[in-house]
Image (cartoon, rainbow, N blue to C red; front, side):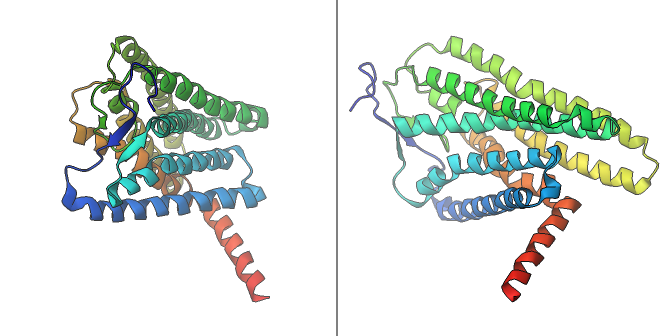
Length: 314
């Protein structure tokens, strides 16, 4: 069946890495391992924070939400990519492509705002420690989390609905690893100028504004760290901030380069690599950078592990 009268395309073909057939098996193995590690690392964080009452504070509850987003983000992209790499089936229906784009934007947008909220939380904790309980109380925390999720839903709803309102009557080959907006938009048989203006403006608001706020927060944090009397404390804080900024730059930087100009001059292969950095690497690295290096998380993990061992012993 045709989706619309003006559309002769009934499904899309994901080309993925078809230009490198000799690497298909190796890529499948690498992506499968990364996907399993991503699921395991984020699942451990979600479980630890859920079970350990001492971690039910804003910092760790933000991390828990981030892990939920990262697991979901990976689940939207990786299974389909593994199918494309392991079989001859590369087609994806209109409905599946719509759903993939929708949830990709939902979780991607939510992560943008969550990372901004987490930076603000660290800024308040380090720069205003005495008034932190009032600045980041339960009500403020809930508002920031709800704002992040609702914003992601709004972005996904508007953008996906708009993209799929265009007719698709020519080629149905998406030269990308998933149904991302810029790749699908290239196949539209209509003038997409207004949408590109919207996409540019949306990228500035959703990606660049939180990124700039995160950088400003960490600049203030770094100045606060420099005033610390303990050299060991300064070194630990610098290490933590550097790790956080590495993850944030990887996510925001590549997302910005991809979405700020939907029909930019980047080659398809470059776009695929940039997409992998924020859809594959970031969900894998976030557990290591934000949580598993954290001493309190390690203690909570060991506590739960010992409890499990003791229950099996007795």
